[in-house]
Length: 192
Image (cartoon, rainbow, N blue to C red; front, side, top):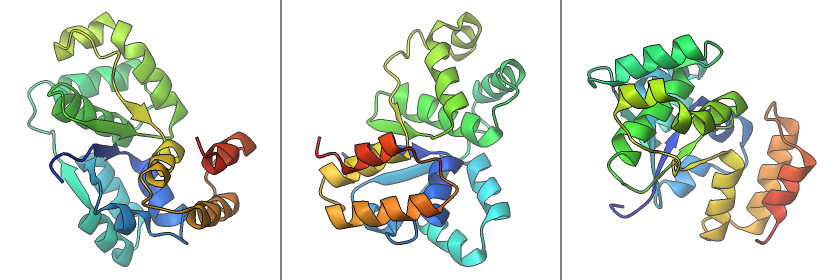
């Protein structure tokens, strides 16, 4: 497990894995190959949203990181909330977990979010002098980010899930509230 790439996930991915995709238990199936991590804020939001039996699965397969005592994290959180008030604590805090606990230490990780606004903000932050000054990070243009679909494709390429499971996932997503476009479906079905 030590050499596995850490997957830092936010609420969008947690919801997709626990609520939207019901035919394939992705946390259980992929937990042997990857370490899933999230923030304390995402964990607290999930406690309010999911039933107890779902929370047991959540807690079993995810490591929760608390950055409340991290010296710079509170300042970053306040800055991002003020500058981008449309972002939620879960997305911001899980991003900060990925940035401070994995990216800045050059560990293997991916930040997983389907929140388009968060993804846009992350793409702007390498040029945000105020944010860079607070973090002390000189450059993070190589910050690794993908979405739930990209993560599922990775599972497929690693042969953790098969084509039949991809089809089951697609059917689940079509019936769910997850925003799935024909292009994303084609991407899931693609062999490359």
